[in-house]
Image 1 (cartoon, rainbow, N blue to C red):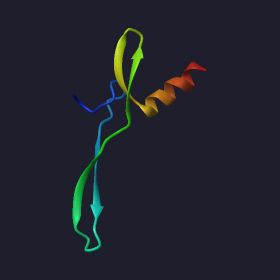
Image 2 (image 1 turned 120 degrees about the vertical axis):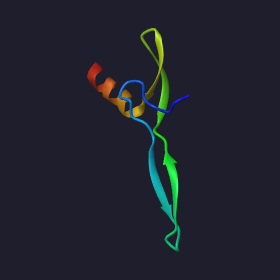
Image 3 (image 1 turned 90 degrees about the vertical axis):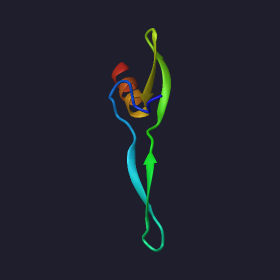
Length: 58
C-alpha cells in the first residue's frame, strides 16, 4: 500500500532529528492522506488536493 496521493503523486519526505550531541537520526515524514470517494472510485488524496478541489467547486 503506497503512501502517495492518487491525484498529484506527492509522497513522503525524509527529515532528520538532531540530538543534543548533534547525532542525526533519519525519519520519514508521511503526508496526510485521506480516503475519499470521488465519482465511482475510492482514492487516497492528500489534504492539500482536497482543499484545492473544494476551492475549485465554489
